[in-house]
Image 1 (cartoon, rainbow, N blue to C red):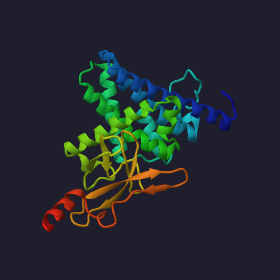
Image 2 (tube, rainbow, N blue to C red):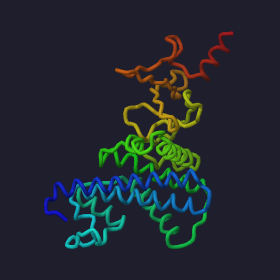
Image 3 (tube, rainbow, N blue to C red):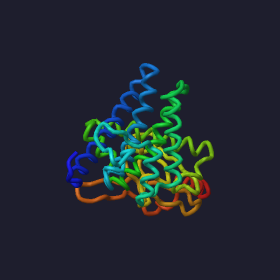
Image 4 (cartoon, helix red, strand yellow):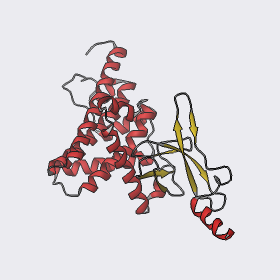
Length: 276
């Protein structure tokens, strides 16, 4: 290994990221194939591998020696740390993961260990939830800590966008299941729970409010990635969505008609009935 840590570090971090992205692509290939039981097994193993590598990439961005069990032995054939040790070293170096991120990583580790060291049981839906939980950690962690837009990074490897779409829909399914099971109050930015909407662009019920991926108050479709602004009905306070049209130079929001935009569809119907 070269003594120039800055250049070596850059090259090595890039290798970790590339390797992690490749694992995600292969995970989705197995998930979509689902031709044999081992496809679902390899989905889990590849997803966990990606999460582990991205944590190590963040450590390597600080000091590449941190990814090794023994900092005095840092050759390519020497042992690297476990995911638990990676979390510990990140914390010691000022990278603080949220309680939810830590819970997600721990659950991912437990499922992966059961598959790798014991027998595998479960359904495709269980595996999709596993992928969704991983996305709940990865998408936000990568943007915050490694300045990676996961959609853009994966779209460079997959021109039709099917990889990120599959991951995104698994994420939405995970959020929806959390809401149904009453665990939603444990989720980031959702103390009041979620509302779910059908996207007017693709027709899929794949919009969650609040949106865990965005911090500007807008929401997006987890299926086709369309963006919406959010208003609140003046009568019942239920959120109402307006499609955001992305132009060549600016973003314009389509609003309801001037006389009606402040009411949701249900309240507009009630008001119309009262006027009759």
